[in-house]
Image 1 (cartoon, rainbow, N blue to C red):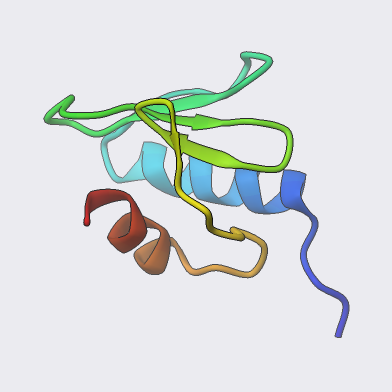
Image 2 (cartoon, helix red, strand yellow):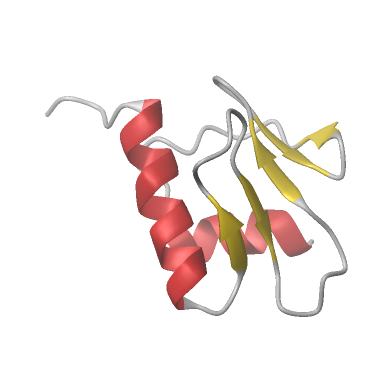
Length: 74
């Protein structure tokens, strides 16, 4: 089975975060997502994800939203 592309994964995760109550700005060159408590900011770069300007060192392609949220808040 072909692996999900990064842009597809980013869109899927941003949509799920928006539905979960996060503030999402998907129309930016580097989309951002901020949780309801606004304790941090997630920035989606071309092939990387950053939490408050620090790389999370994760591959979001095929990653569940639950796993993504776990990686962001730990």
